[in-house]
Image (cartoon, rainbow, N blue to C red; front, side, top):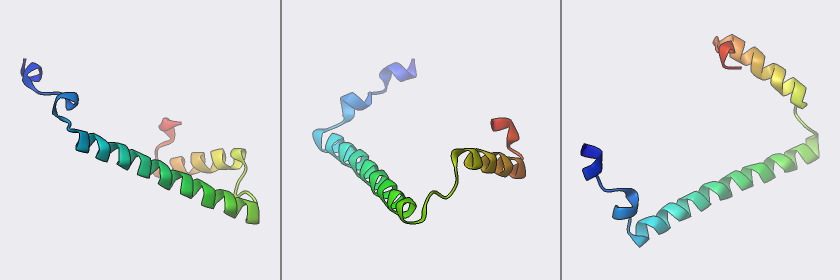
Length: 72
């Protein structure tokens, strides 16, 4: 019953709030792209750090270390 009385984001968001949300989402995406480019440049210069199989093994070992093996 109480939720029926609560306004939704669409009802309360103003254009400036929506623009801010959109800008922050774009900014997060831009940061992710920059990190990916930096990683690609490092791999191009030094080669890959691990193969996919090695990474999977490392994640399993680390999860065992943390006691989180059940999450695999």
